Length: 90
Image 1: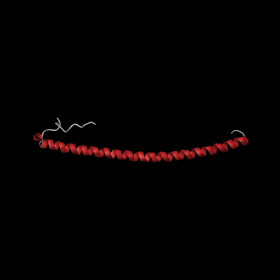
Image 2: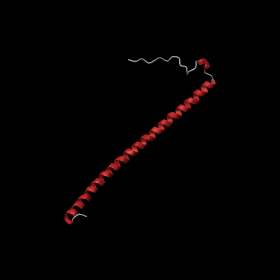
Image 3: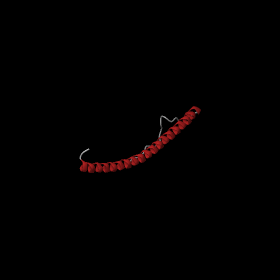
Image 4: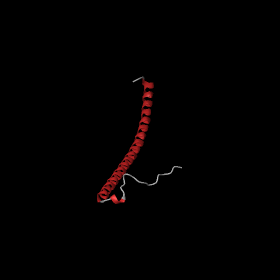
């Protein structure tokens, strides 16, 4: 079993006595930017999911259309074959 490292000293987080107004202003700005980034990513993921769903439905409809056209082509070939058998090649 792998143990996680405990929360120790981080060079990026200043000690409490150095957390002044400038630090907190930067933290608030960063938190807002991070939230905006997460929201934008979620929106993009949702748009991709909606587009994928639409394309899957369109693909299914096109497959049905292709199957119908192949059946119709088969019937047409059958009619032409019967005609050619009776009257010779076209």
